[in-house]
Amino acid sequence: MKNPIRKTYDWTLSLAKKKTASIWLGIISFTEASFFPIPPDILLIPLCLGAVRKAIFFATICSIASVMGGLAGYGIGYFAWDGLQEYFYQFVPGFTEEKFSKIAVWYEEWGWPLVFLAGFSPIPYKIFTIASGVLGMALLPFTIASGVSRSARFFLVAILIAKFGEPMKEKIDKHFNMLALVFGILLIGGLLVVKLLLKH
Image 1: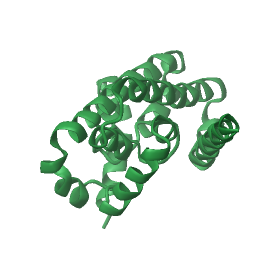
Image 2: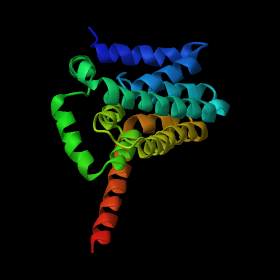
Image 3: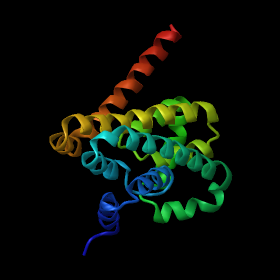
Image 4: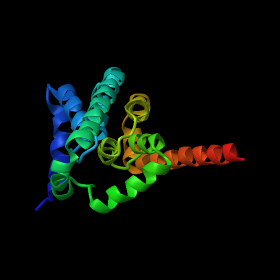
């Protein structure tokens, strides 16, 4: 018997065959930023393979919907976290009290670069959108970090798929998350160096 996450993954993948696939892409992108467990790349990739000329259009849908979903996640954290946190800890994959405690410590030191890292990398973006609201991160840098990182991720995937097709799909499936994480870590490392240099 399949576990719930696998069932949700398969259901998300099946949406690519529907006439309303682009609408579903927007819905998945929006909800993944606050509670849905499957990243929109799972739907974005087959849509780009099936309609190469619309790859940029699909990436645009992903980017806009994901940033809007991130703002919704921020709102959940800012306005409703006290009443909803137990629900998230119990039912939303990736949410634990331990992770939230660690993020609170990281935010004191880093702030928006963490949002950028989560937006581009396989780190669950939803944890950071909600944490940003809970911890009262300034809305403008949150929105800019989300917009740049989410767009960079989705447009990169769409352009690679449009240019190289099925072979690139296999490479993304295998290596993209690792490459994205390494890129994000290098970015944070660079910011750390700059910060240290400015202190001297």
